[in-house]
Amino acid sequence: VQLQACGGGLVQPGGSLRLSCVGSGRGVSGMSMGWFRQAPRKEREFVAVIDWIGSTTYYSDSVKGRFAISINNANNSVYLQMNSLKPEDTAVYFCAAQIPPLYESTFSRQETIDYWGQGTQLTVSS
Image 1 (cartoon, rainbow, N blue to C red):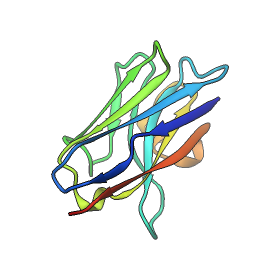
Image 2: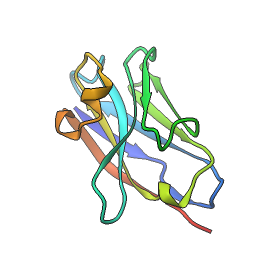
Image 3: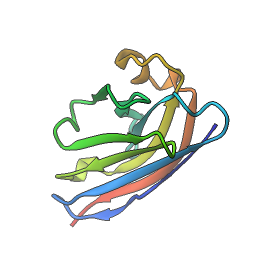
Image 4: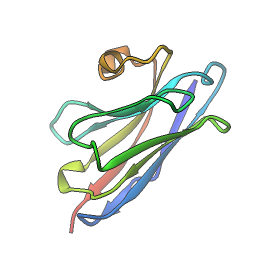
């Protein structure tokens, strides 16, 4: 399984951006997919996750109400719509996939992630 993330960039505070991640390879179908992020000098942290059919989502408290995760399982893609961006959202964002079932307590721990994509940089600055 390979994950390809894109969509990062430079955004002003209060702005919006959408990240995309496309999965490929045998086995990607059915996986829970989500996002982590890592800011400079900080540990990687969980952001959001969605199950394959799009019925269950979990968010970290820091992004709840501002970010929305969605999935298009027809093309093995997961999206992260980020609104009301803040400077503290600045980080490298990583796409992640995990073999189901989906439990928030499990997916939020990076050591349980089965596959990682490369990171895409988001910078929120005026």
